Length: 267
Image 1 (cartoon, rainbow, N blue to C red):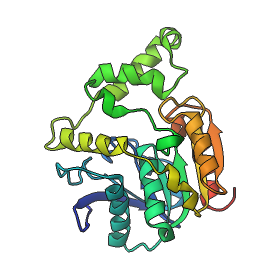
Image 2 (cartoon, rainbow, N blue to C red; image 1 turned 30 degrees about the vertical axis):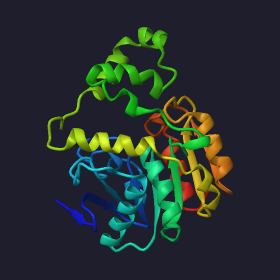
Image 3 (cartoon, helix red, strand yellow; image 1 turned 90 degrees about the horizontal axis):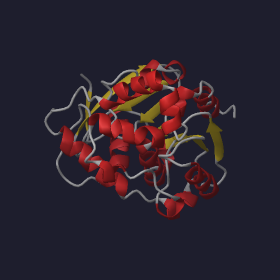
Image 4 (cartoon, rainbow, N blue to C red; image 1 turned 90 degrees about the vertical axis):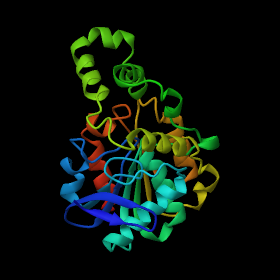
């Protein structure tokens, strides 16, 4: 299995595709063993995609110590060093978008073009949903709580009218096939702690990298107002809303092709 030894820990990664290099940074709880993932979609057919399990998650090291957003950003830079990439396009999704913001601020010369998907700037610009406050909810209870937040259309009336589909959604999101692994609970908690402190609002005007902000119109986790705030705060950025909630990249088939066009300089 491919592991990159960084100065602070070992990161599990996968790489596939051909073309310009693209670093994909996944969201809260991201684990490359969960399928489908980025390698099953259009990005891996358009770019040389590098994705990884972030510290505390998946098959990467899970030191039980305080994590910072700067740590996550520097992990991404260290992984690129290990692969031998000087620069790359970067796509950050949800929590990965928070890491990507920190990354482009700490390592601006390494990012060719940047896509921030369903994420938030924190601070005065607005924070994403506080997952650390519902850490006590697990399994089906957690999935039911988050469903109408992840997609605000999925309220009680929608759930009643689409009972079979809603049951499928809950079944898919309620189970953790890797629960019980050593360090899994601790690593996930450390990630949420770092996430709760994300705030790059005052530094975002420093971003000079061409940036696309992509979001779902019905996302209650990374709310639309936070996307507007990002677009205002990042000079020259482009904002696009798509039909969907927090999972708009799989709900709207136009979303990922639009990202690809932007990364290729066509939009």
